[in-house]
Amino acid sequence: MSTRQLQTGYQTELADFRVNFSRGGAYTAIVLVLLGVGLDFAQYPQYEVAFAFARVLVSLLIGGIVLLLGTPFGRRFAPWLTLSWLLLPQVMISWMIWRTDGVLSPYYMGLNLAIFASGIALPFGLWQNLIFGLLSCFLYLIACMLHPVGILPSGTMTVNLLLLLFAAGASAVYTFFNERVRFMLFRLKAEVSQKNNELEVINRQLLDIKGQLLQQEKMAAIGTLAAGLLHEVNNPVNFCLMAIEVALEEPVAKAEPTLLECLVDARQGMQRIQHIVSDLKTFAYRKPGAEAEVGTPFLFEKALDSAIRLIAHELRGVAVTRELPADTLVQGDEAAIIGVLINLLSNAVLAMRKAGTEKPAIHITVSWQEERLHVTVRDNGPGIADEHLARVFEPFFTTREVGQGLGLGLSISYTVIERHGGRLFAESELGSWAAFSFDLSRVA
Image (cartoon, rainbow, N blue to C red):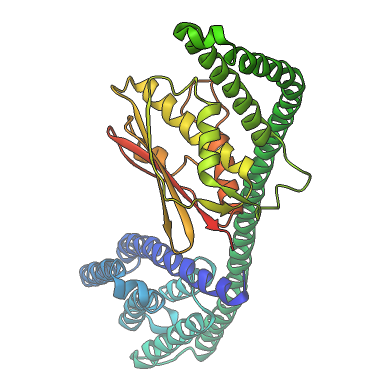
């Protein structure tokens, strides 16, 4: 955070602090002013009524300033309004000094008390505090000069005036250092807040890395499985296909429609096994550094076919429809995009089955827009609640029951699409549908 930003933030916070503190100080001043009737009664009973009236009037005026502090105008000019209500008791005390014993009046201590309070307790600026102290000295001097006996005894007058000036100077020093301490505390708080924000970013990055590591471990396991399947399954499948092709050429098979149909079905079944193993190989096999390479051309339609075949068992009973352009050649990491499609399709199926959706359906729309292929996977399931919609891409966020998912699929899918220069986002209408959309780049 720059020094200018720090100063701006400090002034904003200080404005709130000054308003709140000024109100508290004003309420305290009202209480002290009213409690002073005890001093009037004990020291000058002959002025009790007049002084009581003056105290009530000053309290009402301070109350009016407190109300003004609650307005935008009051917030803007809080320091000067604070100076105003502080001067009201000083004017009242100076009037009481003039009405009573002048230089020898005990009310002089009230002026000193207010000056010290302004420097120690109230959030004044340096110049405001100096102005308040000097005005208090001026009011005392005027009150004594207008008294019938003048400034006598002059020695006492000099001492009292000097003490007021000393109090004003000390109060200004207190104000200066209080202001510096407040700013240092604000700066520390701002630094702590900034460090906390940085830690949150680091934690999110660590969660994302952890999710990617888990995904890589899963892919490594699938890759090992695919390698075994390729070796163990392809050879016997090829033998079976060769045997089926030979059998199809036999006159007996051609003469028997039922036998011919069975052989054709068997050949299609073997070919399906070949496709599944091939799709698994594409999905799981990645060269070193493939995470960073997203420039390989591939047909999106082929990737979509692979994803649907790989989770065909999950899609049973779900109507899957699609709209694709004639050309779907894009560039990127085909295996990663297959993973994204599997995740989106699986999530849609799970949500619809969990909600008991009648006639579950998934519609995949693909179209070219400004040299990018836009893909939308939309289901007719229960939709996503508003409070969850903004969090679906957070790592480890899931609405599934414990043990049914880590909440990493959409987070990893988001990272994959972002790596491809696109954006994955969600839309939903609760109770009606949910849709996930992303885009891929056309081959340059």
